[in-house]
Amino acid sequence: MHHRRLVGIDLGIISAHTVRVLAGDGSVVCRRKAVPTVASLTETEQAALQGAAPTTRLEVVLEPTGPSWLPIAVFFTSRGHTVYRVSSARAHDLRRVLSRQAKSNGIDADTLARLPLVDPAGLHPLALPSAERAALDRRVRACDRLTQQGACHKRRIKDLVRQLLPTSPLAGELGMADLAVLERFGADPHALLAAGPGRLARLIGKASGGQHGQQRATHWLAAARAALQLYGDHPAVAFTDLAAEVHTEVRLLRATQAELAAHATQREYCYRWVDPLGLARSLPGLAEVGGPALVATMGDAHRFAAASRFRSFTGLAPRASETGNTDRKGQPISKAGNRLLRTTWSAPPTPPAARTPSSPASTTCRWSSAARTTSARSAWSPPTWPSGPGRSWTGGCRM
Image 1 (cartoon, rainbow, N blue to C red):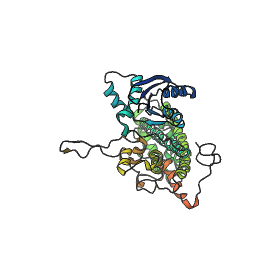
Image 2 (cartoon, rainbow, N blue to C red):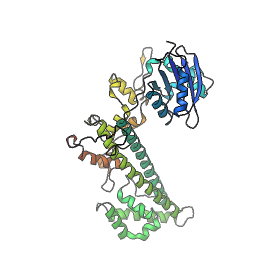
Image 3 (cartoon, helix red, strand yellow):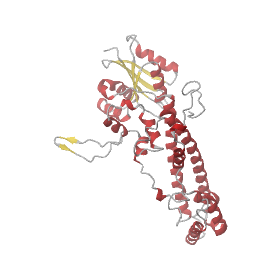
Image 4 (tube, rainbow, N blue to C red):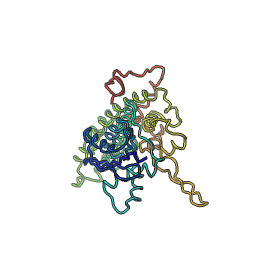
């Protein structure tokens, strides 16, 4: 039993990693500093295995600290060792028990190394994804991040327009016609009034495909007149500079939407490779975005022995609060699962009635519509991997 080697690694982002190696009885074998290079990690591996049986395999425990965990996990799993990636909350709880009054990198590494001794049933070996799943995971994360960035740009645009036009016509979703107006005039009331109703109506009609025109132009012009009546020529209102900031935000939003559309296309290719039968999307409530998010975050479904385990993994299961003969129901959800999966599943859908003809769905929703027209499984065949998964495949799911 003492031939076990438990390795706790407190990861550093810009500093060296702190390593503690324990034997099976909890005694310290060695202390090391390591950096993510083959030479440094090989030296750590040799020091950890010194004096152990030839068949001993390291049990490496680490936290998901930024991007630093991946190089360590790849190195040790490729050497045949077992890697456990534990939540920061679990490591924090044990550290408070072992060392309540002090905290250091060495204490954190020692705490991680002792987790297999304290809670062996609560640790599960880390299974790194295949090339296909890794590509899908990156595309899903990129789409989620770009969607949030796009929403931030839209909120910022509305806030800036409300400063220029206190009675802003932007009450709902930002439509293509509204973006065209903002891109041309920046919501500067002087520029809007100088353009006149005819020019403004033609611009709106062209951008909205004829759905809007004179009426929407009237709304913009009314807001511009009201703004000038209120502000006059007050020096505190920097019309030109606010309009320039609106132009910047519109350009950033356009670029974000273009990148989102590109990543969404590749996300669809990757998802069809990982889940060719579309089983995730066949679940009630999951569609073009939720299906890939589920597949990318859950990994191998066989690792969940029961449905309750999967509910706990999602973080949507309620907390338990029971003491004596009292069982408190109605507790909030644990939120212990993957944030991306939880927010994707809990986000309310946008009702069709809330979207106007000049306000099409977001890039993700527009991709969803396109995907539905080409999702016939009989008409699609997975592309091939010319030199093995993740090497040089250029026909679909590009990493």
